Image (cartoon, each protein chain N blue to C red):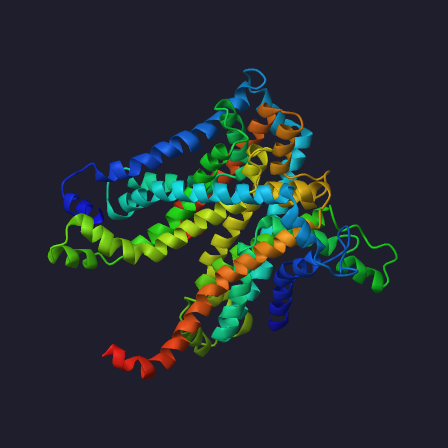
Length: 282
Length: 266
């Protein structure tokens, strides 16, 4: 089939369209129509108006949730960077065998379901878990509540999303030509100035990739904040789910979903103009 | 730097390691370290239809999703990688869109859309939704493979008289097989692990394993989850280590083989 295409492709032909058509039609029906459905519901439920958007954009509760979501996503991104950069550096600097083992661990974490990792943090941070036991042992009479707080959901999200950051930074670091570092050293760059003027700019694409990916995933994160977070400090995805499941408030849920979608796509569009979206997940 | 690295490794590894002893625990609720050990929760998992049925549903849905995804993605990837046509970059972008939209947004959409089609709470409905989410991942893997494909091999086959169909079956397909397999595997895992859309649309009838786990964690934190987590974790470990082990075994066989096998080789 591939060869047929190559022979025909000299003339303008229908082959690519024929090959593409089934998927295009499928995505149009089962991906775009449901999305448009959300857009329509945000204006028509319960009746035709822009009241849902007015509420979402001006209501104190909703503003608080959006702000909370942004702050959490920013914090998680920053923490992933602080965790990921040193580890990627260590992997790059260590022997191939050690680097392989660390990479295996990171990949394993990456492939282990979100739910499994969320559950593991529930065990670790629970009232009968090892961390609370440790805090008791070192003298806390009444250890602080760790589970079902902003702390526990943030920590678990950092753990879940860190592999994205590590893999992105590591793949860029691996390609750095050691000659560049050596020549910088021979020109007198040392320590922090070597890092600041040579290493950091060279790894910047990996950092940008990792940060955009982690931030965007975190903005729409549902499972972990709902299971581990404080019910009083919801994130936007949790609130959308709540509106649909508890109140069957499709209008409000859809309006919030549209705002979340607009923000996500805006961030990705900026990224796309500078780097190309296909590189983000590549 | 080294100390930070070790701390980070512990941070990443600890949650993965902890579920294994938890699965053998005899505690009724979350408690670590466990007060005692037994296999009771393994027995509970393998004898409880409330857990086995969602597992079966997930396998069924992920398999159907993989088949449908590959049937749609393989021809489309050939079109997008091997052809230049007006609107190609737009088509490339559209392939990735399902990856860009937060799952919770899709969940709201599918809840209403599949509800209109009377497909909410059915296996078929979940497959239709999951296929959309698997498409970009299968496409990314396969297009990377197809871009690295040396087309001179096809030209050589054709210059030797192979027809286009023969070339495709005997040259293109075998070379592309690893890429196709990995792409299908990614599509399968994407569906098997997908939680958010499944929570909203799979209902009681087509309940998937992630949905059942989510509900169970939210309500009672049934220790059976530790068993499933251990099994899933083991599956990932096997899938990751198996290729290395296989390669190692083969190279070791190859080292010892030539001496004994050389007469046959001649």
